[in-house]
Amino acid sequence: MKKNNFWTTRNIALMGMLGAMGALLMYLELPLTFLAPNFYKLDFSEIPVMVGTFSLGPVAGAVIEAVKILIKLLIKPTTTGGVGELANFVVGCAIAVPAGIIYRCRKNKKTAVISLLAGTLCMTVVGIVVNALVMLPFYSRFMPMDSIIAAGSKIVPAVNSVWTFCLFCVGPFNLFKGLLISLITFLLYKRVSPLIHSFQQKEGKA
Image (cartoon, rainbow, N blue to C red; front, side, top):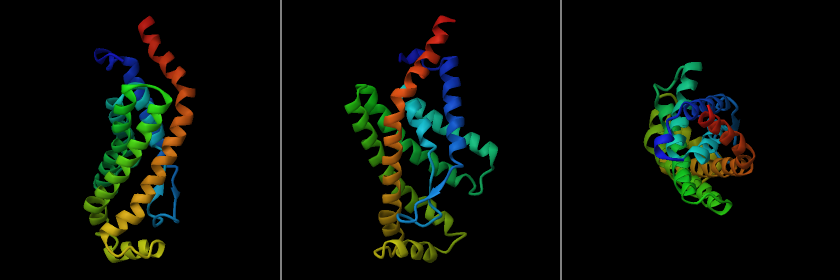
């Protein structure tokens, strides 16, 4: 898509709709207690973000991610002073933006797979760092850090510190989430992309 055609009315509407879908999907949460303590939950809110990223590019992915967070805040105010939402935005962008940049270079199945794997790897690394430096220190105000680490050690005995918790619990959790989101996106995108492109083309004919 040409740069000067990005901020069209229909693209803005499309990003808004995908962001709203992502916000609603944030409420469908599943614990993965075989990977991380039950206060880490899997949701599927990144799927609309990834579909929008593949359709409109990496900038759109970041915009949809922001819209998702803002709508979620309108539905339910933050309980973390915005820290949790900021972390969610950063980790979400960590999969969407790299994947969108790579996929934009050559739009085919092979590049799609490479872009999704690269995005998943970025999300895993960023998730580890963000949790170690931001999220866990913040949540330790409400739950003692020793209790958080103990919860992780029940799943992975090697967990004995903040960083080992993030490496052995948060890392695998985000890796699993990223791979699952990537698989669903890969299977779904080609089925919904004709509808998206049809929606975009209507503006040019109006």
